[in-house]
Image (tube, rainbow, N blue to C red; front, side, top):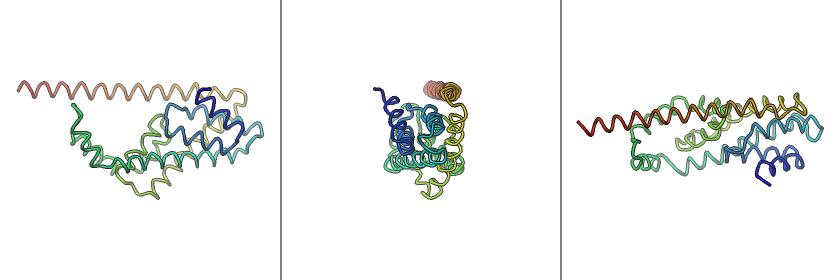
Length: 204
């Protein structure tokens, strides 16, 4: 049984706490898709195996727990270690880390809140928050608020669609693919520009 099938079975048998565990693990392992688990939780609620409110509250709790674990990963990594890693990367500079840090210090709260609603990014945003040691109370509050909005939307969609709950995965999956393509394109552009500039500097 693959992980998705196992977590799906867990949610169907354990109800709302199983849904919370599925979403916590989804935070830690982004390939596990919340666009499957959340609509399924809504469908399961529609079948009477858990209440709609329990599905929303438990999955939000799972989101916060998973985000906190990644926050502590970032905190353990720390700013100094990130800067040392940057010095060893061929096309990365410490100044890039400094600019990213400055941006996060200005926009961290918004990044955590809105990041919870962006596929793929919703898991990763917890790590820089931990690296920068964002205050825990605001981190939890913004994570919970963003997760509540995202989880409620997908759970309600699964609840209302009933047997067609899997349609949510198709549409949200397209959004996830678009985010990955944009991220890959941005990375490719960054590498190209930085390599071109490095070659020009070497010739000079």
